[in-house]
Length: 189
Ligand code: ZN
Image 1: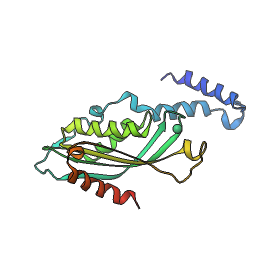
Image 2: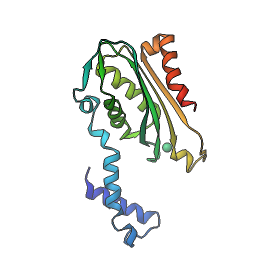
Image 3: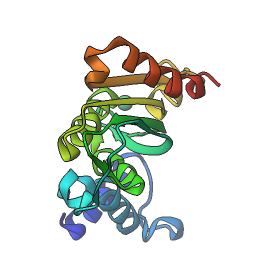
């Protein structure tokens, strides 16, 4: 990302919305916005195997692993406005598990891009499944979208819930039900 170019575009944007980019409070705003954007879109430069970085461990257990309440902050690709919430990731391993922090890193890798919630949910599920060859994976994500809350329909209390299930979570009803109960009980609170 060319920071000087992005800064000058933001400066131009300030003028277009009727601001004076030279007034005291805005002098360094273009530079700050450029830095914020670089961070908020840093997922483009990464993939799941980069962020996992080998933190895959052997495990003889084949129980379901669930990590709940992973924070999600992303930008919607339609308005470039934030949407945020949390997600729950569950999987049944086939002898290999991921470090817990790595699940959060996978979420960040896909959320720090322009996104739609439905696609991000699927991308996270796919990345977890592929990285450890899990028997099944489920992801449930619930987010509030500022583009919906601050503009448009102005529905301040609506939450979008998306889910993606792969492998045994897709094919086996009891496995899916166990995951949804563990993820959904919390989601309903
Ligand atoms: Zn939007």
